[in-house]
Length: 98
Image 1 (cartoon, rainbow, N blue to C red):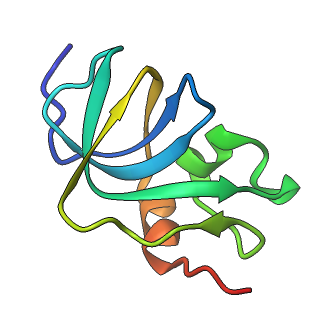
Image 2 (image 1 turned 45 degrees about the vertical axis):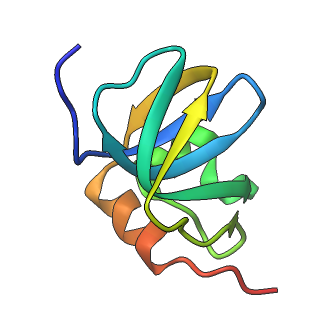
């Protein structure tokens, strides 16, 4: 697998976690490290599934937590999906509003 450091990705885990962040290093099935990791807690039907998050980003009906400071390591990785520029822009603009 080619080095993809600095790429914005969506990561899924065996524990049903969905995360957005900037890839640090090379991902593996065992773990992946992200900078500015954000947890996607909920996405609405308009998002059209978790891959819709990677394609277009969160909509106003989604619930995305704030970015963690520094780096975060996620374990038991089931998928790493490259995000489009449109998705990155939507994640960067998203704020959790009750």
